[in-house]
Amino acid sequence: MTELTKEQQTEFEAAAFRRLVRHLRERADVQNIDLMNLAGFCRNCLSNWYRDAASEAGVDLSRDASREIVYGMPYEDWKNLHQAEATDAQKAAFDINKPADG
Image (tube, rainbow, N blue to C red; front, side, top):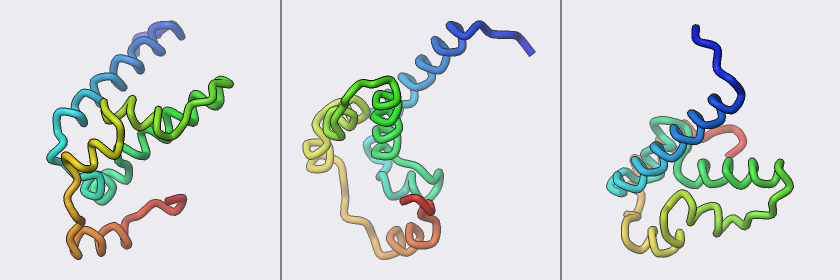
């Protein structure tokens, strides 16, 4: 395996994060509940992890600000534009699959 410097690792992780965020923005048709049910995380989780990282670095970042970083717009705007009401099947799957810390 190729040994990476700490700087390379950070650079590549940041690039992968940016690509994931771009992909999630482009795939607004994929609902958060579907992401949760299939992958165990959603856009909100990602924004929470971003906020946690900021907090660990001593940066006070609001939930709204971290969500806007992930969604590319205020969360309420994204919800109004893209979020559909969860179906009973989606809700049932979420109850079965939701993370223990969720």
